Structure formats: C-alpha cells, structure tokens
Figure 1 (spheres, rainbow over the protein chains, first blue to last red):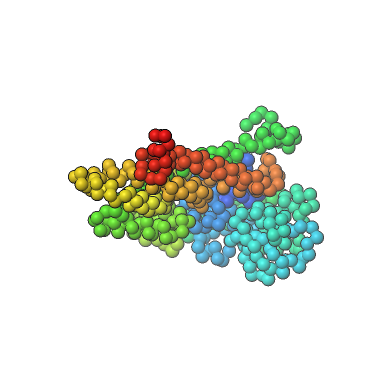
Figure 2 (figure 1 turned 135 degrees about the vertical axis):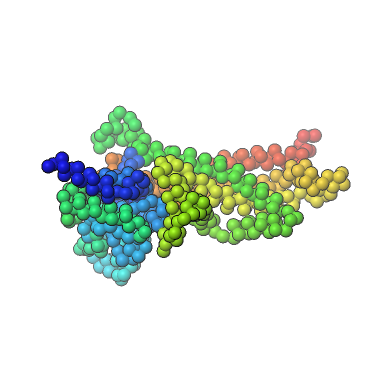
Length: 243
Length: 294
C-alpha cells in the first residue's frame, strides 16, 4: 500500500512538471535575514532558500538561485532574468498588477518600529521614519502623517536610526528582532506591532501560469502536511504565526 | 580557510580577523577587484577602436557617413551615461533575442510583448536555456562591456576628431605637394602626429572610465561597490561572523583602490606624453630637442 502511494505520488509529480526539464531560476534579494541572506560562504541561506529548495524538490524541478537588488527585483523578473521571486515579498494590490503571486507561504507577519531608547512614541505619527524603498512598510509610512526616509537596502535603515538621521525604522519584526536583541540596549521596539501585509507569496510572471500552478500545488501540500510550519518555526523562532 | 576557523565565536581577535577576511564572501569581494580591472583593460581598447571608427566617420567626405559619426557622438555625449548603461544592455539583450526569435520560431503565434512581459520562444533565449551561471555572468559582462565601449567611444571619437584637425594644416599641404593622396597623408602624416594632441583628452577619458566602473553595480554585476556595501553592513548572529556597521572601512578600501589605480595611470600617461612629444613641433617637443643638443 505504502509503495503504491509513493508510486502514485511520483507519477503525479512527473505529470505536474511538464516544464521540468528547464532550470527554474529563482530570484531573491539575499539581504534580509531570516527570510533570505547571503551567508559567509557566499551562498544564499535563510527560510526562503530552504523552503524554495524543498518546493523545487517536491515539484521535480531543477532550480537555481539568482541574487538581485530589491529595487529592480520586479522589473528583472518581468524582463525574464529569472522566473520567480522569493524575497519576503508581501502580496499587494499594486504588485499584483505587474506580476502574479502564488498563494501566501507566510501568514501576514508583524512589522514593528525600532528606535533609540527614550524615543517618544509620537514619532510614529510625526517623526521621520526610515524604511526600505518599495516595501509595504514604506507604503504605510507614505500613507501616514510621518515623514518617510527610504533606503535601497534594509541595513541602511537601521544605520539611519543609529546615527540619528531617522527617529525610527519600520520593518518586518522578524528582521528587526536580532538587531534589537544584540544591540545591548541601544535599540528598542517602539509602540505596537502592525500587520501591513497580506502574507508573503512567490512572484511569477503573469504569463507563467503553468509554473505558478505547479508551485501553488506544492505549497498547498506543504501547508497540509505541516512541513511548512516546521520551517517557519525553525527560522522565525515563534515570531510569526503558522498555518 | 584555516583549520582554527571552525568555531569563530571563541577565537582571539587576530585569528577571528584571519578567518573573517577569508570567508567565501570576502574571496568573492577580492575577485570583484579583478573583474573591475578586467573591465577597464577590455573597455579601453574597445572604446579606442569605437572612437577611431567614429572619428574617421566624422571626417569622411561621404556625407551620410559623417552624419552617422556626428550623430553617434552627439547622441551619446548628450545623454547621461547612466541612462545609456541602463538602456544599452536591455536593448541589445532584447534585440538579440528578438532576432533569434524571428529566425528560430517563424510559426510562433503569440505577441512578443504581452503587457509588460517580453516573451520569446525557448530557442531564442540568450544565453540559451539551461546555461550554467558562469555563462550568464559572462554574457552580462559582455553586454556591460559593449555599453562602456559605446559610451566612451563617443568621447574618444570627439577627442580624436579634434586631434586630427589639430595637426598643422601646413603638414598635410606639404604631404599633398609631395604627391601623397588623402589616404597616404592621413596614414603617414596625420596619424603619427595626432596622438600628442589626443593624449590629454584620452587620459581624461581613461580616468572617467575608471571612475565609471561602479556603474557595473547598476547592471546587476557584483562589483566592488556591491560587495563593500554588502559586507560592510551590520551582521546579526544569523551570520557566522557578526559585526557592527563597518561600511566606512570597506568604502575606505574601495577609495584607496581607485585612488591608487588613478595614481598609477597618471604616472603612465605622463611617461606616454613625454614619449609622444619627442620630435614633435610642440612646445614640449621643442624643449626636449633643445635639452638634447645642449
């Protein structure tokens, strides 16, 4: 019985992956731990690396990772430099007009403000807030009353708070956590967490329906059998809800 | 790299640094210096060739050709470099794929542009589908090289055009009086003498070329600026070697690199200028002649 079901699964996979002979090129930013980062051995590491590799393995695809700057990550997907984006990218209305997303593989995750100790909470509404450009967080600040200060990379936003250029930084809490923990009290969380995103999904070209359906199917599978939750717990240490 | 690097958290300081500075990312950083130097060494002769062709075209008595030359230099010199660096690789990349698409897939029925997507058939992909990463890197590098050659070629063309015209008219007239045709007088009289007039302009362009190499970073090539920013940023304990914000030190290293590169080039151009002035009817050539006879 067991062998039979394995056989059926294997057949199902080989049907699902008509595109399998191609190498699927997976784009990521590589600067946003724990979502994705380049480790000291010059390899992409993090939750999305591990999860993406598992997805490809289960879909029977050969995948290869490509690092691209956050600011041009969508244009380069559209131009065909790679086939998917897995870079902690929240599914939003505006992005969905340019690319399509799979279902989310991370639930809506908290964003938080971080500032120097003693900063008044009122800076959230009338101070200068640093964010990475083109993120859901920068959208939140732009829509609010505080002044927005954007940077191309996430660690520049933290540096801006440290040197006083910005009053606080708004970013995913999972990213900020270790900066706060390891600052020796020089950085603290400010105010309440907010939930600006509708969950993180994998971006694909709008014309690439087959690829999107393949990944959608495997993501559903991994949600159902709990293996996705295991990975979320491993990388986010309980900072994010599971499915 | 070293055997003692297995647990960096307990290492004494000098060993920690020895390990830190030899991580995979640092080796990639060091390699990126070679990438930049390679680009300069390839882009300079390519731009010189482009410029020479451009200058000859500008001088041509065949009007459409001279328009082409003047149009090229006028266009490239009038548009910000950065726009060209972003435009040329994309335009060439898509252009090549489009041509391959027309050749390889004549019965393709879908439009190539669907909304913002640029879609060609599998056989038309450049580099070919399934190419390893290094082929893609080299392809990207070559596109960048073409962009550099195009942009700097226009400046070189203008400089050489000016230098050709700066060769005293009397010299060319003398050549003609000796019965040389246009081609001969250009090859034997103008060409050997124009370099001394072109050199100050060329050395300027060389310096600007060196300083323009960080634009590689814009084209998605991991150059030294990319790595300096990447390695310098604060690293939390997700990384094996956590450290605070060290960008200032990394950028200082990049600054020293560029400064020494331009310093060496300046010495080289001084030497070259000296060499080209020898026997020329320029003030410096005259000074050399008098120094030799005295």
